[in-house]
Length: 210
Image (tube, rainbow, N blue to C red; front, side, top):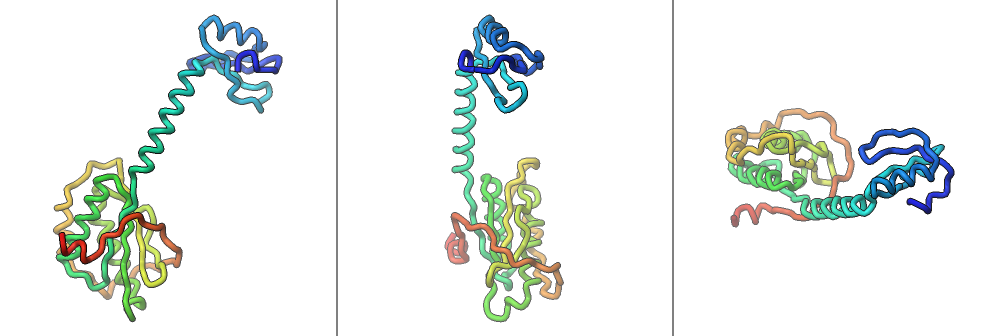
């Protein structure tokens, strides 16, 4: 930066991002000084190196602000989990899916888990049907980030908030929930890839107590 730039000439960029062509480094530095700004080498490996006239102090401050905001947003977003059973009734499906929509509205990702027991694991198409219904009921506020897949005796799917659409109230899931699961539906093949880990799990018991 400034006098520490050792090359003889630079490809100069002005504060607005306009290309000023190749200039002797001393001339570029003098121009930066006239503007009461800094000459910063932004692409030292280029030939010749690229230098930009800028307020380096403001640049560092803005970069630090963006980094802090990014960390804040990252820490605020959690991965919730909602568990379903293959033989779930319409009422329980309605309640759980309302909660999924609430999580999405709050900006959280949600891992949907279908828990198979006994010989239920031989009918993964039933779990796939339930996951498809949850995804369909949540389309107004969320989108499928990780498609349904088997993980041991569970089937997983991850939904993420969709910022491009206006959130819909959780009551909108009621009509979708009235349709019982058709256990004869056949879904496409499902790969056995381990899904992401969750930070919070909502169990059947917690739903019933609420």
